[in-house]
Amino acid sequence: MPPDDVNIHDIRRTVADALLNRIGAPPWIVGHVVLGHARPKLLRTYMPTLPLGEARDALERWGRELAAMLEPAGDLRRAPAPPGALGQEHAGVQA
Image (cartoon, rainbow, N blue to C red; front, top):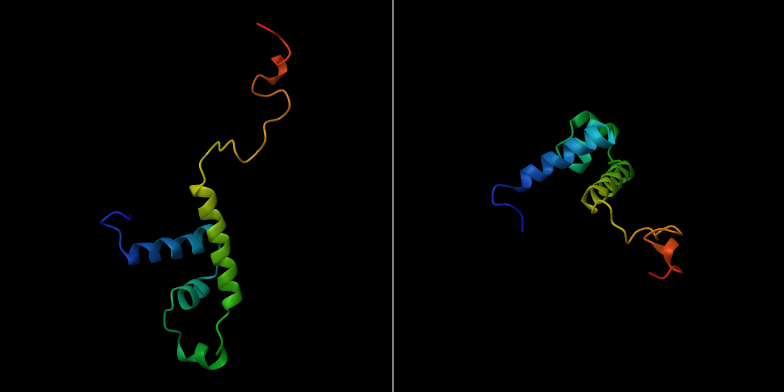
């Protein structure tokens, strides 16, 4: 459950900031396509379709980065232990 002092606009600002500054998405993609801000008449006239592919790519990159940030550090389940690790070098020695 989210904290009581977080609202949808905080999430919009965070995503917009991440797309601009971490991912490097163009400002007009973030503003007009992702956030849905109104486009000037000139853009609506000469670019009637939105570049959804570019927005999707930027959001997918942010999703991967966010998932990596949320992944626990040092998760040993991801990679098998190399041979000889975790005391395996002493497997044949009796104490």
